[in-house]
Structure formats: structure tokens, C-alpha cells
Length: 226
Image 1 (cartoon, rainbow, N blue to C red):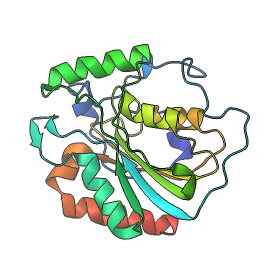
Image 2: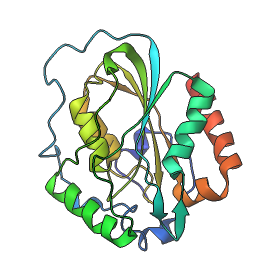
Image 3: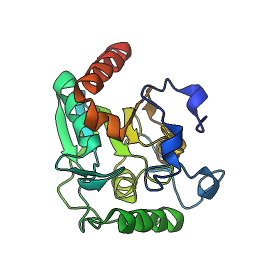
Image 4: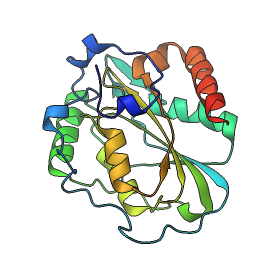
């Protein structure tokens, strides 16, 4: 597969293209994406001056627990695992995006809900208590790729927090799509951010090979200078 924007990124991780067709929730769906220019997504603080940033580091992530593809029941979500490996190496602060109302426990119900939210740009409310992101110069942003993009709970965080002027380091879990369209969407929200090379890992490989995932994460971070 050749996701949009991949030629401009170093993509690390395992690609299992055959699993994508069976994993609608986590598979890429480029044909049904928002299209050129991403109508419905407005740049954060469009035309404004980026905020003055501190030098702290923040690891932000959304991760789904419970039922996951292919037939996993996770107490700790795959993206949360990767976020933990990153935080272990770089330190700083850590924040988990939590929907105000959890997604359904049933995988198929979550799949249908995620597709509808993405296609209709339905921003999912998240719990309060988000950090003041102006104090962070480096923000790691992690999420599973659902229908080719960030889950709408994560996009709620992105819409509501101005990360322009920061170094943004994306990391994702997926089931064949790699980053999908999420890098273009990220740059749509934050045209004045410095988006570094990201990390992508198949979700079930994170679950089955956590030590190998940690090794990959450390190698990726070392390559970025962390």
C-alpha cells in the first residue's frame, strides 16, 4: 500500500495488507475520505501567530481498550502501550484523551459509529482536564487509525488545542493502513507546526510482541534525536 503522504515520511512498522479488508474499523478508507482540502476541517488559529511555547514535552494519546481486532480483549490499548514506551524514553508529561461517553464494547458497533463520525465530521466530546498545551514545545500525538484517519475523539482534542509552532511527533497503531490520511489531516489542523517523522505499528503486533515494539520505538526515537 502507498498511503497519502508516505513518500514524505519514514514509515516504521509492519504492514499486513491482507488483514485490512477484514478490519474495517482500523483499515484505510481513502475513497470515502473528506477529499482535497479536507472540507469540514478548519486550521486551528488560522492566520494567527503561533503561541509562545515552553520547552516541555507532552505525550498525548487516545487508545481503545476492550474488544479490538482481530479478536483481542485489551485491558491496556495498543496505542497506550506505544505511548508508554515513548514516555519511558523521553519523559515529560503524559495525557490520555478519554471520550466523555465511551465507545461501545462491541467491536462492530464501534466500527459503525466510527465510520459515521468520520464521514459526517461528528466531533466526539471528551472529558475535561486537558493540559495547557502552550507550555509544550514537543508534542507526541498518538492514536489508532480508524477509517483512514484519527478517531473523532482525538480530533476533538486537536480542534480545541492550538499546537501550531510546536514539534509534533505522530505515532499510530493500525491493521494495514499505516498512517492512512492522518498526516494530511494533522497538517490541515496545524499548518504552522513542525511535523516530524512518525511511527506506525500494526496493533496486534504491539500486543503480541511488546518487547520488539519497544525496541522499534527506541530506534525510531534515537533517529529523531530523542
